[in-house]
Amino acid sequence: MKRFSALLFLLFLTACVNVAQQENVAHEFSSVTVEDIFNKSVSIRALNVTPNHIFYAGSQGQFGYLNTADHSVAFLGRIGAQDTETEFRAIGSTEESDFILSAGSPAQLYKVNYFGKRKLVYEEKNEKVFYDAMAFWNNEEGIAIGDPTDDCMSVIITNDGGETWEKLPCSQLPKALKGEAAFAASNSNISIVGDKVWFVSGGEQSRIYSSKNKGKTWEVYNLPIAKGKPTTGAYSLDFYNQNIGIAFGGDYTRPEYNFNNKIFTNDGGETWEVIAKNRKPGYRSCVKFVPNSGGKEIVAIGFEGIAYSADYGQTWKQLSDEPFYTIAFVNEFVAYAAGDKRISKLTFMEKTPAEE
Image (cartoon, rainbow, N blue to C red; front, side, top):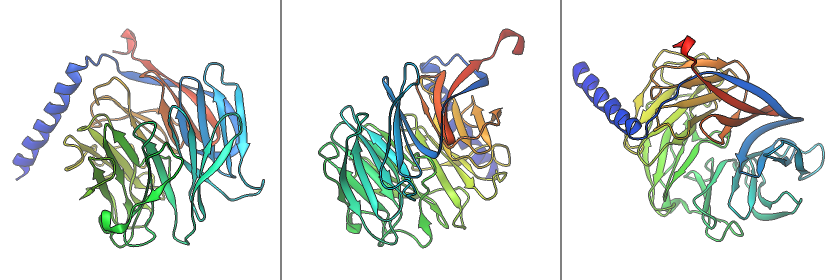
């Protein structure tokens, strides 16, 4: 059985390598420079980068925009009183509008822009409500997911550019398991490629939900990742294409735990392999594929620093101990990361001939 499993995993990696070769991956990072561009007394958990603006949302009801070109402030806003406990941990954008969604009750979803305009487009009051992440397929269709309030995970969908949102009934979703919820760690436990969408749950159970038709029907699969406690499970998810994906997590109360906190799929999320078992890094709150890498290169960040893999997550190196919650790539060399009281520009550097 061990030989059979090893053979399967070898075939799995070979398929990944074929994809990478087709995209001519040529670089490998050896370091990263971190340049703080924005400091403010707010915990920033959600970040989106466009050619014009760096859009963020965070604690104390705050959100804002920085100009991408020179990192100057375009607009800083707040919803609610100065001492509000409102936390915006989910954001999303179309070409026309930006959206922020608060985590706890009442869940409030606002349509906003960098001129200061804001419009409440969805509200949900329930002692169990807690929304975690949001993403858009296109300018008209989007989705946000959260913890169960009834017998299923919470899923709301828009089909009119975010003007109205409708919550899916539990009859359209798989039944939630006991102790199953989700984590609003970095707005990254959801991923969209084409018409497909995936999101991961965690806690006492950890699963991946998959829809091939923009949320009309759903399938769910168990994940071979840390589970069993409210603080365990998959925290972050990213798909490079419709087949290659990675999920990252563990236990944020035990950040050194690395037995089964990193998993990889090559078939669209139906089956998963544990990668880098018993090897660093441990818990991270956000994982992203490096653009234009064929799915070979991955960056994972968290309060324990920035980790990087150049071989589909099989081995990792620590590039920096700088703590962050979330990351958004501009291209394969530049990204922006956000954390407690700051947003920073990350520049990834390739190996020099002397390092090879």
